[in-house]
Length: 253
Ligand code: GLP
Image (cartoon, rainbow, N blue to C red; front, side):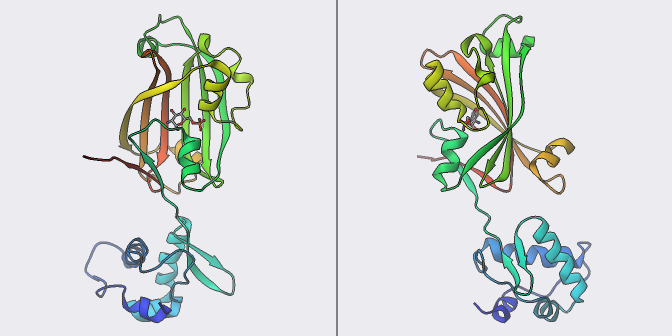
């Protein structure tokens, strides 16, 4: 669709009486046009001039909307060429099967990677020991990783595993390899199921920084208790996923 005709599909005139600033209304219109598929990935959007004519606002107001959309990775610009719709792949995790982060990302045709944020051995708190059905003095390996898809931060994940099950785990290359792969291959731990809890939440300032969010955008907090064939809890994981990139799907029958 040519730039001008897209400018025509951007909806009714703006509501000048609304408490929502004009630039935010323009931003929302463009976001809707992208979500509805009228503007697709790598398509050039109408120029600042076309948009300012369309909405009868100054180019500065249009620029404010475009800057916000660019910051949030809805758009990207190429100097001298214009502003384009970014390819915002949504990662879906189907909830019927137990999968690892690596599997979820590969299934979307993307490249998974990790950065190790912390790896240490701690003494289980009373609460954590209870989750594993162990005595409170037990030692736990705690590994915190930033998980990325195509080099973009997607989640912060802290996993806890009783040390006795995984001697030497912290010496492995946890940034390069799938944890589930290591558990199966090196420790003979076959994970067969999990109980997962999902909550919508606001990220902490630290989480926003690590995930590269430009403000308190909604995230998903996911807790997983993963067990082996005997029902023994092997892993307790707490993750925080970017809410705008990560979707959970459930099959209902
Ligand atoms: C998911 C789960 C975690 C699990 C991780 C393993 O993200 N929420 O509980 O630890 O997968 O991922 P990988 O095997 O890619 O390291």
